[in-house]
Length: 199
Length: 146
Image 1 (tube, rainbow over the protein chains, first blue to last red):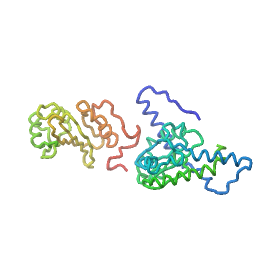
Image 2 (cartoon, helix red, strand yellow):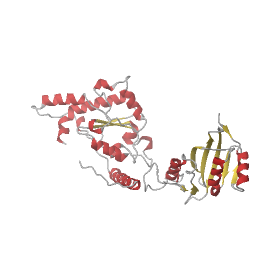
Image 3 (tube, rainbow over the protein chains, first blue to last red):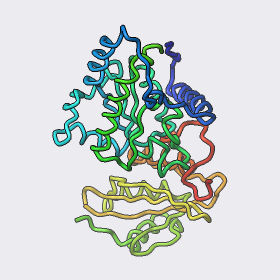
Image 4 (cartoon, one colour):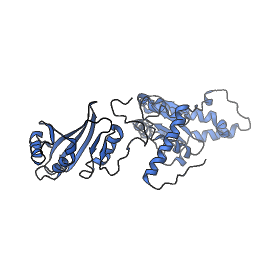
């Protein structure tokens, strides 16, 4: 995909470029919601017989080595950190390291309230992640805006900005909840890999 | 512990330097006239008995009839503190003098107040929005903002 590189000279022009990005995103986002890629929920997936074994190995490898992106927006991030720490230890699912670069990450856990000012950055990070990629919306604010839905500065649900695979409700969700969401991502990977491959 | 100065005594000192510059003074706070704000702030910072060298906090409050900006001043040398308030009656175009040249804390605080409350600080070196983007309609912390 093509990345715009605005020619920036002064800080005022940085501001103007930011305004343009936010208003463009806001106009697009307020009109419509990005539909969730939820075909995986349908159990009747038909696979090619020749591909089955390769596919199974690929799915197994992918689902057991997801690297999440180190990315926390608000208080939900602490539950995400708690999930990664020794008590809950998501290394048990092969998610050893939170990657700092979107180029190395497979899973984006959007943990917390997304504001309009942050929205272009989130969209950009999502675009920078390499395929295949998955998104978990963690907590009430990421799902629908939560208590701040009516607020002037908060995006009412991140599915207006990026497509979401799994929603983990809670305010904030317990680490067990997030781990349940991650196991759902595993299920999705093992059921949906060929469909993803087309895109 | 930081001693909170008696506002009446400090107001007397300010009144000696700038007559009729104080509206109300009680034990807790001083409410100054907005046109004298910069002179009073300079006096409080440079007076050898007061030396308020640190602006701990700057807050704006919307009382519908007027805006009130609160300055929480601390002297690190004498370890005492003072609350200075200024009222701004103009609702359409509220303006106050900036104190950035005295206390650098005021830089971001005044930008935040300008962003969310819409009070313009004259003399601020870089007065633009801090949290919201340029061109955002209105000032959301005002009480009449929908």
